Image (cartoon, rainbow over all chains, first blue to last red):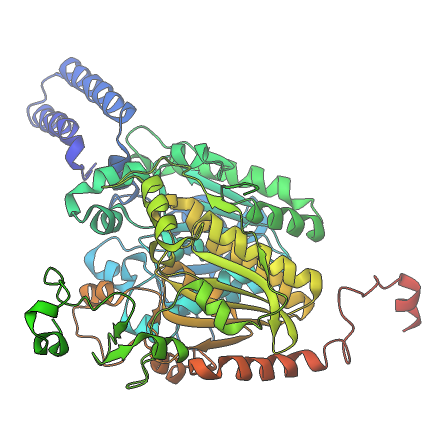
Length: 321
Length: 306
């Protein structure tokens, strides 16, 4: 397995390199060193466990952006069947940074909306690093309205550094596209389940993130601004990212403490990229459960509950003076 | 030091050598656009619009509503809603201290003021952002007061107008602030359902989370001349695309040209123009279509009869 290790995983990387080397030797010389191998593997496992038991918020943020992490298309492949991608906003273009389509989850038809990042350089550029332009959000809205028309539940998979900050995006109304989605999703007469699978980058994430349920994968993050951006603005120093990540409380545990989450979906040891299948299985179970719970609600009470949920966001105090 | 100061003999110069741009307190102001030295009381009479170059200066929320609403019948909404610090946020300074400082400086509790009042005799609800309060950033209090304004407007069936001036979401409240985008936008669906006009009036600057939620959702979107309005800040865009931004990029005129706003209104015309627009929007309300508020659910018999 060719794993890309993050800085803080270097001790694991060293061990894993040794293991790979030994396997090579074993293969070449047909000598039996399986005991030694086994021991090393156990050590690697233990090391990973100890490192992952004490991850800092900034380290989790790096895992949420891990280049090997499963993306929307991977989950579509592993969780759903009969996927038909739907393209274009019917006005300007098709934005590859957002994927929309019809699919089945355990034989139930659903609509999937998800950010999509690229794996290699070429695809990264094609997907614009998962940063949608206005046409991406407008495509998402068009397909969500289609879901409403045909009474299909919507599953949103969120994974973006943010909405694209570019000249063309501004010209075509990035703000309006995001705002429109927030407005429409609040009253869309069909269940919406939002899941953060990687990076929940601010308004660009929220624009497909208003719904009846909010789920986060264990090592995903959700924040109002990237730790880098926050550090640059509030600390005026790029190397204060760790402090910024911590202060904003962006990890699944911290977001749950703030009362916004319905569920945290567990990832395999070392993160989702270590085992796509386990992650997908866990996510599928969560999605199926929530979908089931929402299925039997009439649209009036669904919308009323969603509205009350949205209105409950925020903390303040009120005094008589 | 201004040219005027230099001309005066040093003995009667007001001591302001520390800060070059400082002019005698309260008497003169300098236009940030054309650098004209302006007599303060004259500037105030002109609604803080530079009489020389027409530059619309930023004004406080309270001054904004003072200029906009009729003098009689004003009632402030959510006056005592105050910010808390849910995350015990601390950067180079504590969030709490930043709030206290902003409150002292502006004499406001947070960055949004909401009032019920009248516009040339028409009852309305109006809200205004205060850019001096932490950059007009939207946190829980701003979101909550905005929603209360919407609710007041629903209660009385009167139009809702917001004057935005904001750098975006308030980072120190993290997701609590991000979700105010959803909260304010959701509340606006109720106005839309009831056919009650919502006018978004964008002033300099309107960026980020405020722009990408309540500001762009007006039945009518309006801006003051030359206001900076956009999603991403110009510096961020420049760093991303590594290009020089075109002249006038993200200014009101640019937005009108690209179809994002309905019109640009000069500050002196705001009252008369909006009153006229609102009057037209409200005239036939409920004439052709029954007000959904009063609409009784249609009974099955009636449906069958059709």
